[in-house]
Image 1 (tube, rainbow, N blue to C red):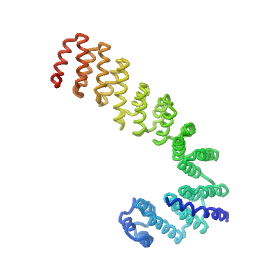
Image 2 (cartoon, helix red, strand yellow):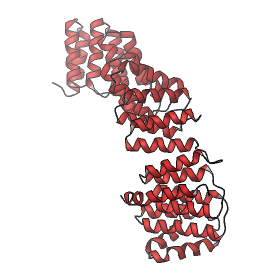
Image 3 (cartoon, rainbow, N blue to C red):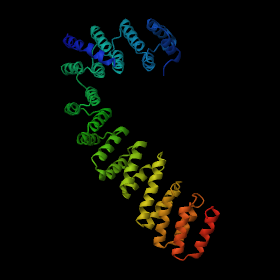
Image 4 (cartoon, rainbow, N blue to C red):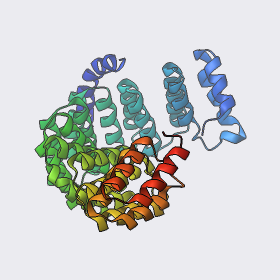
Length: 409
């Protein structure tokens, strides 16, 4: 049989891999399985399968997963063995149920059981497909058995109907990303493209984050651009990695391009990305980027960052004495229900009005915020000093009266 030689080669590596790997559930049934001894697990599963509520046979997988979470891996594997025995007893000729068991073995890093399932499928003469090969490759890769995974991949290349698929290449890309092997990641990425496949979003995430962790920033940037060329929408993890590339390469001029892409492509920004972008924009004091980011997150869930950006924009215009832009930013913020949080921001606004000698507009500003923001001693001192400087006695007397009423001598 064509696979026999491959199987013998695979078995030689399984022992070492298994040793290395050592490193919507039915609540009542789960409680029984947890409390009962291991020798009763299969019998309990058989009883459950015979009952009306579990006739569909799909209940085993969430139970096995729950037992793993409950730190009962042996019982979880006994469920897998029970499911395998049941498939064999019922003479199931479909490859998919066996593939599901092998996929679960990949999650538990049990390459030995995965190989046993594969051998049973072959022994029954069931038509193999690339799904079961991919499942077994994932099981070997999760167990750290690269040799067996590679051997299986090579055998797929020579078998009709079982040729490597996009999922095959994705599995190797993700595995070598976890291993921190940049050269291997890139080799499998190129191999996938040469075979005519587009990597999945998960594979692109593994590539980009893997290269960033290895400080291979040019490679990460190149892969990101290829992903965009494939019209794949980046997820939050990829966007965070992309922003990390910009920061570490000190390409802060590209922040504006990044924001434009987010806006044009309607990419979603999570809290961590918004916080980091806000910090970058405020630190650089670039008004265009602050305005870009504010437009992206306004009326969204990022209230803290929105408030910081409003204040940063207002401070920028106040210090630059761009009075019209400053007032537009102030009233835009207030109209959006955001209030001043820091007295220093109010102080720079007042000073800008005094420099322009726009006393009536200063009065309008103070009247707008007076009911929502309590002036402190420092703000009153600035007002008193300004009105004295410009001999505005009526405003000075009124301010002193307000100051005394507020409890300041």
